[in-house]
Length: 440
Image: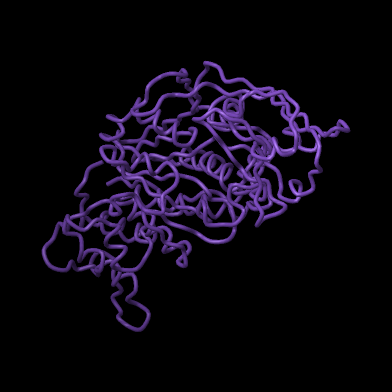
């Protein structure tokens, strides 16, 4: 009998601090769905994950109902008043420019300029995050306080950008296990300077790769992808769908997992996959007061992974879910919104879900009726108060080792974490009282 993991194999206590340090390094980079920012981000992640393979898909390639867009590059962008003062400058904050803005260099009156300006009246100090990937336009984002302070007059608008044939870049790492069956992790690297909504995902994923890589034995193979959201997952699926459908037994979409406020769960479209069961089990024993959402609350790449005909078993464990916190898609979602503790909690929540998948097996009893544990040294020969806990746990587990109940379902019946059942399962197996129903 072999055991897939030690019972205490969790990420180390410094994982959250390392994730936060990586987020600080990545924060200034202007990322979009294509371009230099994505490549620069992946190059830094590759420093932490030497196994990371980086791929390019050329612009114009058809991916299901979508097409890989032209590559967007920006050199500078600003609005200048008649006194030559740059009142909005891309160099000050990369959220100031509408994503995928086309080039422009002209003088405009304030009235002509206003339709191209975006702000949030209800959040006067926040810069909104706005994109226009698939329709050519230009624009600037600024705080509503800045907008209302603009004086009548003429303004020079300059955006030095290009939209040209290039490529969509993504990263992938595959960590082989004893089985070709896979656990799939996906995160995105396409937003500019945002904390919880952008950098929590890839930094948590980086630490999870570090942890998975360190495990003495991996039962399953792990596939981890760092992609642009939506077009990246669609592109990846268009290149790998048959093997993913054949191999993936559970997957988790990693996003918005770095703040300190709350934990959240969003199911797969099916809602009853192993990933869903593992996510709910992990959160129950990690943060029982988590928020539970439905698939109609979707909004990230689970839309693609769980779409009809794809139907991968992908669920999401998050901290504050996208769209549910006031700073979402604004400049206020910065490094102050995430923390080493928040990221560390997210890392451990996902790790517990992964551990649940790794440890989950079906077992079958090898003897009829309740086994005599005492003669095997598994039950106290002197029966009294406080002496029955382990013996009762052993018999409770044995009772459901019928080849039909997996360990996760037994753990749920006993209201205990899967990983806390491992010592008892080992004792029963070493005594020859149960055997694995599945051999992987």
